[in-house]
Every structure is written in structure tokens, then in C-alpha cells.
Image (cartoon, rainbow, N blue to C red):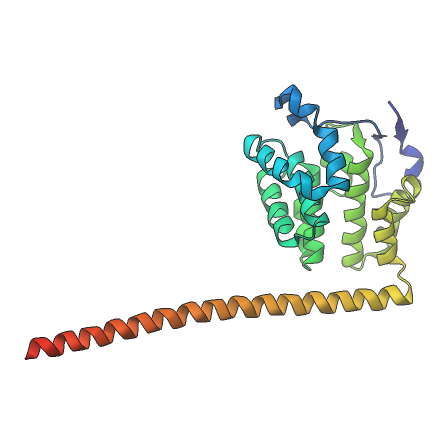
Length: 253
């Protein structure tokens, strides 16, 4: 097993107890035991398709979620497929559903935490992780974590502390991720947040403006939909009232 000890990385880091192992080998979730062999053999294929042909794998993942709702990895893969195909609303809905159904699953936690960061509700993150800011403290019975678990968790921690204006802590999380996976796309995301260039600042500001504009538009559409429903109800009431009036009038004669 190609593990890496993280003890050497814990120097001058009082709040990170890195007394566990990181593996790059497959580390199946315990729910895998419930899957038929034929499905287990397709997991790697599903993962690869999610990366290169996400649209082709969506139907299969929806089917697997319906058949095996107790296996959270299918939610994780489908979320990735939705995001890769630009179906953000479906991805966000699934992220919340996965966290509600599998609150102990690490990727359900990290996906929901990233959603909270995007929606400016970062104050929810400590509760998501049970106020534990280290993998070993969050899962005390585990001594080994997959590299993707490590990167995802510590990325969230870095971005959370950055959002809370705890720069020193954010930098420490970034440095520990950067030492293991300097070329990972999540490492790059943290770096852009902590050390943005002038043009990145402009871009991020523009993106935030577009997101704010989009939310306003969505709220306006929802308001108009509700107003339309009210108008229809009022129209029906008016028609019924008019009908009653003529009905009463005819009875008088």
C-alpha cells in the first residue's frame, strides 16, 4: 500500500493532529459490501465516465441511486456529472439530498460545505463537521484516509477559514495540501483565494456580481410566479362571486 505519513508535516501546526496515513490506493466505502459483484466491477468505469463523458453516465447513476440509496458514492458521482454538464440546480439539489441522507459520509459533508461557501452560509460549516477541524478527530476510528478525502477535507478547511477572515489558519491548511498535491486543481483554487492576482480579483468580483444578479433574477421570477398564482385565484374568486350575484338575482325574481 502506497501510504504517506503526515507526521512530518505537522511541525508548527498545533491545531492539526496529522497522526494518520494517506493512501493513493482504492479505499472502498463500507457500503460497497452491499453491492452485487457486477456493480462493484463497474465502479471504476463509472468514475472514469464521470470525468470524460459525464452526460453518458447520468442515467445509470440515477438508476443506481434508486436501487442502492444506501451507497453514497453514487450521489457523489452524479453530483460531479451534473456539475460537469452545467446542471447546477440539479447538482445543488442532490448535494443537499446526499448530506441529509448520508451526513456521516465525508464527501457529502465536503460537497455541502462547498455549497455553503458558494451561498455565503459558511457559518454552517463547523456544525457539518461536528466542530472538528482534523480528519482524525472527525473519524477517530480510522487510521487511513484516501488522498481525495484528505485533499477535499483540507480544501474546505482552508476556504472556510479564509471566508471567516482567519488567514493564518487558512494558510496552514493550504500549505499542508500544497505539500502533498501541489498540482491538484483544488490546491489551485485555494491559492487563488489566498493569493489572487490583480486580474483574478477583477474576475472574481465580476463572477460575484453575476451570481448576485442571477439570484435577484431567480427571486424576481419566483415573485412573479407567486403573483400570477394570486391573480388567478383572485380572478376565479371574482368570477364565482359574480356568478353567485346573478344566481341570487334570478332567485329574487
